[in-house]
Length: 159
Image (cartoon, rainbow, N blue to C red; front, side, top):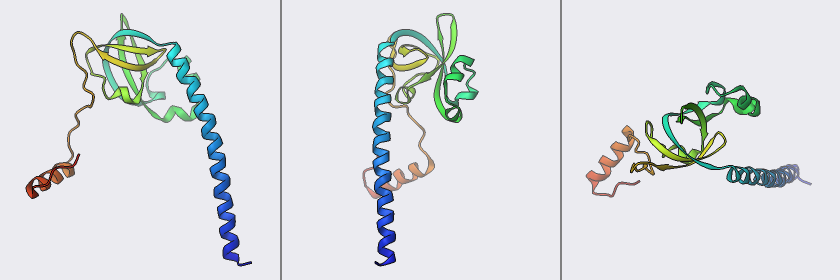
């Protein structure tokens, strides 16, 4: 047999095994995620809170209680996650936040939030305040230049 064909078949077999392994690992992780989501749904409650600050921080730098840090795996402690500093009643806490909700949270405003333990899952405005669905970011120099060139050419700016 040709050596090139043999090498190709070996590489193909390795890829096939890798795909099968990834399929079963993904299936197991999906089941674990569904369990966690069910636990979050079972423990959720609505709370009125004042948002003091929001930022993405590493878990080890977030001044969380020791009990919370012990539950987080060592590998995950260096990953930046969305954190929100809130005041609930007289107590000031640092809470984790869902990535999609993080963008809509207004700073220095009172909101009604759905929380589950130390995790914010949803946010609604309070006292007639409206939450922006998309935070308005400043456009970069290249984006502005592209839009100016398209406007000059008579083309519609892309979004």
